[in-house]
Length: 390
Image (tube, one colour):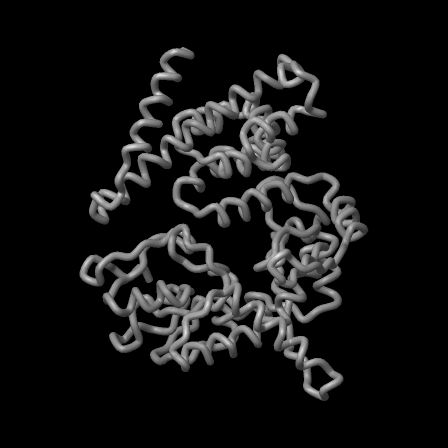
């Protein structure tokens, strides 16, 4: 095996050394990226599995220069100790997750995906199949969000974990070597989400202004500008603070029981999982948007025109928390979309409404496309191939 692997590495080294990417057209370049990505995945899989044996045999101790296996792997591979430790933990967890190990060995998973799945599936093994399926169509961000939900639902000491995070809460600031100011905030997700919600009105206004001026700004840049605008609009200047609201998604059974069980959800929408006890407190202390607040059947709301009633808007925001396009996972600046446009007699009804990021929304209408699939897993098809699902 060693000789075969060495020859393969040598061939690959020569191939990369001789590579002249400017000789390829766009399609050829995309193919190269896909092939090199497969090589990278297979190499990372082999490295992780071999590392597991190094740890099992204690071979990392051979020269006495390293304090632990993670330090050895970090020094050997040129990565951070944190990343090395994650690789070691994942490799060990894979012993109990044969399907995930098989996917990693085949190159179907990146190491980042395998880390997330192994971490969550170790808490709830019944979720392994669903997470592996999600990895094939969802982005890393979407997969990590789902893994966080799985872990939270399976956690038996959710409130104790919440208390530990709260006790370690922090806000730190420093200046990088290039002169950039940095801020790091860490704490319970319901509280950090409250801060981010305060920024939303400022972000929307800045986004609107940038579009009006023909400027394209990244969401990160707009979020920074929103934070600065918020800081400048404090009560000392006599300006009111923008209203913020909390949207909680929680299974009714979990809310009544007081804790989640595998498969159930309790989270701050746009934030992440929280203990049911925290959700109960939020329900008591905050203004919380809820679908069907007084039993109104949102499925029955339908009319022509763009006006979206408040209850219907709430339902759309709840059912479509991120861009509907498969693998996009954008959550900021989403725009409500009529799949069948209003101009073509598309009704303002739940079945015909979704949410898209600005890029996908513009692309859809520019090319007269329609969306098919489920929220978060949708894809575009030509209008001529689409049939209403009402």
